[in-house]
Length: 167
Image 1 (cartoon, one colour):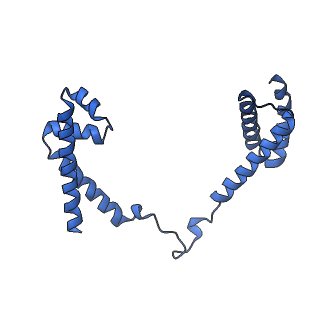
Image 2 (cartoon, one colour; image 1 turned 45 degrees about the horizontal axis):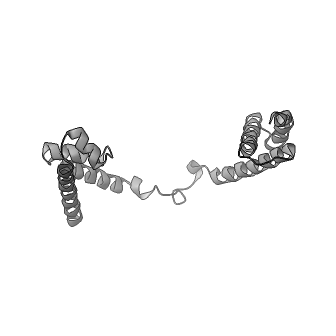
Image 3 (cartoon, helix red, strand yellow; image 1 turned 180 degrees about the vertical axis):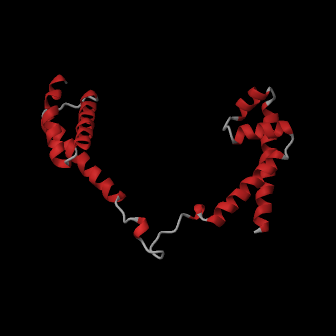
């Protein structure tokens, strides 16, 4: 493995000729070494480390160019109003308002639950705790936690039905 490090300067120069940016070349060289050393540590025999390093660097350069092509786009400020892409639906003002209204309705439904029920349901939904963890934290039986969570789900389902009916 120590022999492979002898090719670093040569690989760096190779990468620099490919990308013409010292920082990008150093990143390519480093990533090439990481991948080749990982191959060696995984038990793959590397007979020609110099060639393999260059080949890996070349493939990484190709991947880098592909990602750059995907990111390339027109200046959005230079586009006309008709050419400007619309924001995703969830960012449209009407949709954002509807989402905030729905969130407020669900929170109100949860807040109307009895205190211990609200506490258990909140741990279930917001803290992503299992029923058993909730039972342990609250010092209650698992069946009681199941009842509380069921009651919270029913309250939220009723809230959803009410919102759908009002639309």
